[in-house]
Amino acid sequence: EAQVTQNPRYLITVTGKKLTVTCSQNMNHEYMSWYRQDPGLGLRQIYYSMNVEVTDKGDVPEGYKVSRKEKRNFPLILESPSPNQTSLYFCASSFMNQPQHFGDGTRLSIL
Amino acid sequence: QKEVEQNSGPLSVPEGAIASLNCTYSDRGSQSFFWYRQYSGKSPELIMFIYSNGDKEDGRFTAQLNKASQYVSLLIRDSQPSDSATYLCAVNDYSGSARQLTFGSGTQLTVLP
Image (cartoon, rainbow over all chains, first blue to last red; front, side, top):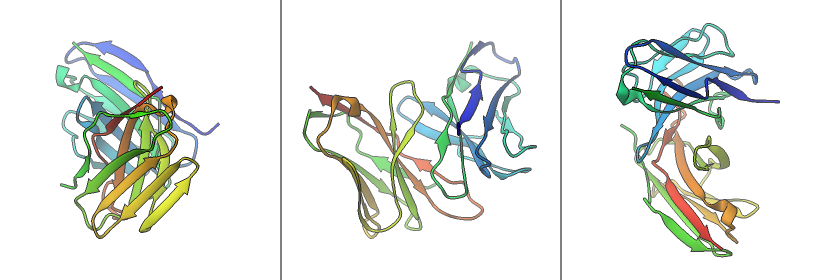
């Protein structure tokens, strides 16, 4: 089954404790992206990747890191999380300039 | 900064009516336009995409694009309570080195039985 898999689905953690949200897709898509969704603000892009070892900033990259060492994986790293990063996060993937497929989301709470 | 604006809603329509959702975008170079449906707490699900001026129909859904006016809309005919969700408009600039989708903030639709 074609899918984008995010883990964990829910996480409650504390300020400053490094965390990683994983994203994996099995569709051989070149393009992968991370978004955060906050009430009234819609989906905002954090980082995207056009292929292995090619990443670039989106609209709200501060406080986040990504890597793309393999085509299927695109982890989102919060090295020192803060409460303003409490949000609903989505990973998405697609072939270039094709509609994106979204993962089920990760609800992250930082206390 | 590219912008995508949607009518803020919430929008309520009776069951069986036509729901009309609107979206304008700022970048005249935009090439691809998408409508996603998102149920509360769930991930966005693609409903329609349109690349050319005019109308595109798929079942009860019709997407309309007017690039001269920088306007894209989604019509839902014979609205059902199961259509109650937030609808997100997204725009793709097709630029080879730039990021892709820019999303609007969404319009919440409620279909009343």
